[in-house]
Amino acid sequence: MESHRAIVPLNLPTCPLRLRHALRGDEIFDPLRVKWLMLTPEEWVRQNFTAFLRTILGYPATLMANEIAITLNGTSKRCDTVVYDRCGSPLMIVEYKAPSVRLTQEVFDQIARYSLALRVPYLTVSNGLHHYCCRIDPATRRYTFLREIPDYQSINT
Image (cartoon, rainbow, N blue to C red; front, side):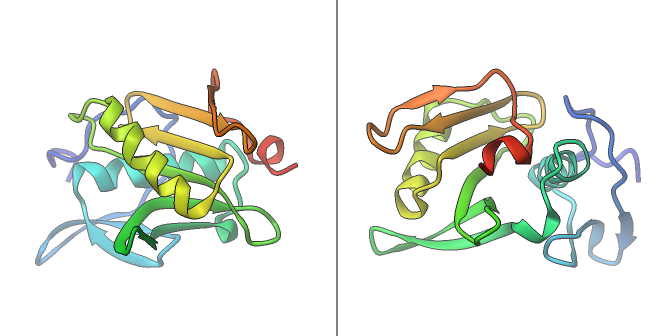
């Protein structure tokens, strides 16, 4: 399975992931959705990044969800990952792209639109190689990019 096109080295700490070969192709287990998914380059990034958040930065798996549906201007959209605070309010949206996809202004515009619906204080984008996180000032709606992805304790204050 290691030769699969989706499995490329990422700029993330190595975390244990569950992979298998099924009749429909290679699959990866998503512990947040508790199901096997097709192993695509974007899913490879998502599973590695959520494992990084959980195992390295202390994000509780019970306060994270993948593929969260939102309505934006009457249109149904999906946030790749939403992190919640201990009261159940959205705290961070994470958007993933495949490693081959550049993180452009268009990617930031996409996640910024999602933040209009959820009103989160943190936005993060990653293609597995590059990761950007910003904090949004609720009063001015201005973004401040952070030097690194913060741990859960520091954003849930």
